[in-house]
Picture (cartoon, rainbow, N blue to C red):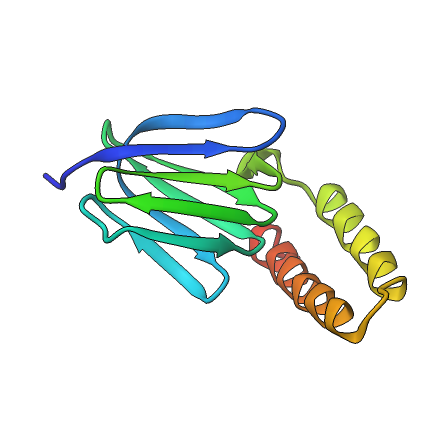
Amino acid sequence: MADSFDFELVSPERLLLSEKVTEVVIPATLGEMTVMAKHAPTMTTIKPGVVTVKLASGGTKKYVVFGGFADILPTGCTLLAESAVPQDEANRDLLQQRIDALRQDISDAPTDEHRTKLEHMLADLTHLNHAVLPA
């Protein structure tokens, strides 16, 4: 049996999960990342995507996150999400509202650098929209 570690997924609205887990797959900004017990200390930003959690008690849970960062230690991982919901609560309207708001932010961006960052976020959200809720 794989070693377990503490995992917490927190958003400003609520604590979504605080359990012993054996594996967490997170959508890190530089690529998908699997976290397991005894992982090297790391801090990474999170892009919009799906977090997959394998519980130590068995079973898997999935959450849709909309950015944030993860603090990873050998004994645990804390993911602080800008916003997050269980995957079964995600729907096309929720994602479309975020996409529409981001498009407005892009048109109002004060600098090219800011606009480029927002365009990357829009690409991530559009991909997430198709990955979580295929047509």
